[in-house]
Length: 200
Image 1: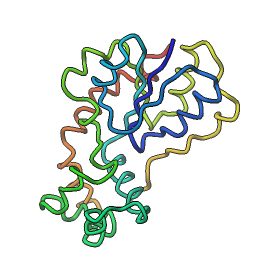
Image 2 (image 1 turned 90 degrees about the vertical axis):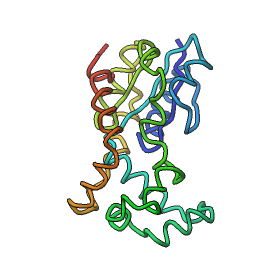
Image 3 (image 1 turned 180 degrees about the horizontal axis):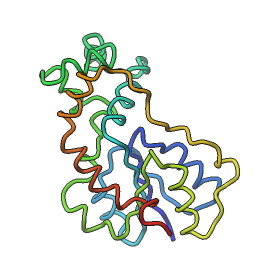
Image 4 (image 1 turned 30 degrees about the horizontal axis):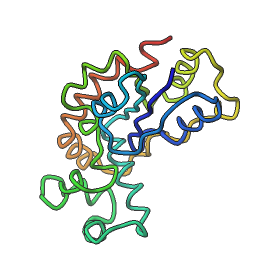
C-alpha cells in the first residue's frame, strides 16, 4: 500500500513525514495547496493521508508562522504585516477588507480546511486516513498499526505541532470564531473520521 500525503500547513506535517520516512513507509508527499479531491483524481489507486487542526488554533499558528518569516514576504504581505503586526491587531480588525484579505492570500492562513475539503470530498473519504493535530502522536500509533509496522523509536517523542498558546483576547478570538464558522463546522464533521476515532 502506498500513502499519498496531502500536507496541510501547520498540521504537524514535518513530524508525519519523519514518521513515514524513518519507518520506511511507501509514500508520496504532496506540497501545500492540493485539495483532497484533486489528490484522489491524480492517485486513484492509493490511500490518501491528510491532517486537520482546530480552525482557531490553525489560523493563529498560520498567521504567526508567516509573520516570523519576513525574508519570504512579497510586497502585499509586507504591507499586510505593517498594518497587522501581531495576531491581536489582526483579529480585532476582522470584518474589514484589509484584515479579511488574509484568508485570500496570506500563506497557510488561506489554506484552511475548506480549501482542502471542498466539492465532492465525501466520495473519497472511504480511502482517506485523517489525522488530527490535537491527537497526532496517537494518530501515528494507529497509522503504523494499520500498516503493521512499529512507530520509529526516534519519533515516539512528543510531537512538535502542539497548538499555539492563546495570544489574543477573548473578544478577538470571538471575531475569529465568527469568521471561521464554516471551517469549525467542517472540523466537527471530520473529527469522528480521524484515525484515533476509527482505530485500527
